[in-house]
Image 1: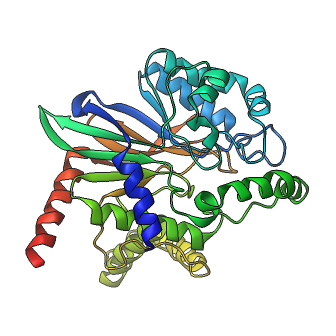
Image 2 (image 1 turned 90 degrees about the vertical axis):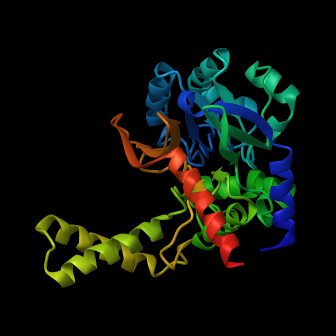
Length: 347
C-alpha cells in the first residue's frame, strides 16, 4: 500500500466533520454513485431513477437522515445546470431532507465541485456545505462506542484523485461522445475488477490498521460490501457451507439448487480478479461499501443505520425494499475491540 494513499486517507479522517450521534436515535440512509447525467446513453442513473425516487419517498416518511456519499451528479461529463434541469424533481425531493436538517453530503471525484460553499448555495440553495468526509461519533448511554467514517473512496487513486483534472477533461471532451455511440463504460473502479479489488483492499487495510473503534463506509467502486465481505467472499463461504452438507449427505433439494447456482457464479468469477478480503475465512467487520444507485437493471443498493442495526439494503424497480444483510452495530464495535485485544496479545 503506497504511502500516498495512507497520507491522503489519514488527512481526510483527521479533518472530517465530527457529528455526535446516539445509538438509539440513529436513523440514516446512505446512498452513493448515482452518476446522474442528462438522460442520454451516457447517463448511468437513467435506469434506476424511478427506483431511487420510490426509496426517497420511503425514507422521507420514516424521518431518516439522507447521506449522499459522492458522485451523485456526473460532472466530469456534464455541466451542473444541465443535470439539475433534467433531474429537477429528484433534486427537489432530496432537498426536502435538507429543509428538515436531515441531510449530509460528501463530494466524490465526479462531483468535486460541491466542495465549494458558493457552488452549493448557488445550485442547491442550501447553507449546509458538502464535506470530503464525515465522522459519526456513536454514543451509547453516554459512553463512546466507536466512530463511523464516511468517505467517497477515491482518495489516493491515480486516475480519480491525483490526475482528476486531466481525467475530467478526457471524459468530458472525448470519452463522453464515445460512450454515447458505443454504450461502453469507462475503465474505472466501477467497471474494472482489478481496480475494484485494489480499492476494497486499500480501505479494508486502512480500517484494520487504524484503530479498534473505526468502521469505514465508502462508495466509489459500485460493489456492495458488508462486514468486510465482498460478493466473492460470500460466494466462497456459501460454497464451503453447502459443499460440506453435500459431502455429509444432508443437503436438501432447495440447498442443492442453491449449490448449483453458487458453483456457476463462482466459476464465472474465476475469469476476474475478484476481491477476497478474507481468504483465510476470518473477516474483521470494519469495512462497508454502499454499492451504487446506477445499476443497469434498475436496482439500487445502500446502507441503513437504524434500530441499533446496520443494514445492506436493495431496492428493486417494483418498489420492493429488501434487507440483504444486517448486524447489530454494538456487536460490530465489540468484535473490533476483541480483534484489537487479540492482535495486541500476539505482538
